[in-house]
Image (cartoon, one colour):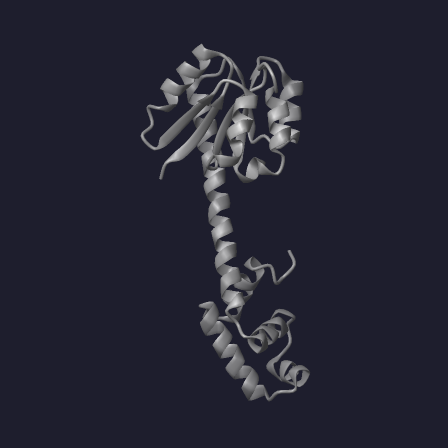
Length: 205
């Protein structure tokens, strides 16, 4: 899987140096932008990835780019803000605006690579969690209205008899619906069914 890194810095020498360092990795695709404005012009069409964002740039500075991304970050881009040494105020403002992390210049290459790896690990974890939620929702949506009624009763801790009374059906029919819904959800126990229901958002956190 190719990982995308977007480097936004107005310093040609810095961009060239970072591009060379990052391109040593075979699983990474690096794209350079010489200003925040140039990056924002293309942001909507870019694949999700890690954004190395310099703070001091002509036009939009790094913080302004981060703020303009708004809901897109960290949903699409995990931002690592690159600041001058001692600019703690900028770093704090960047973190409040949604930056994943920040690095003070000059930074060690190994520190940069470690921070990038941590950002990608966060993205992959979030992606896996999103896929789990979608799978859970699909399983719940496959249930018939009656099966979902029974599942709701189970979530609320009601017994088969109480569910049957509430739905005006027999306890035996509840058992059939319960068996069917567990088959459709791909689970073998009530606790597994509840975990799927929680992931699908049927149980408030």
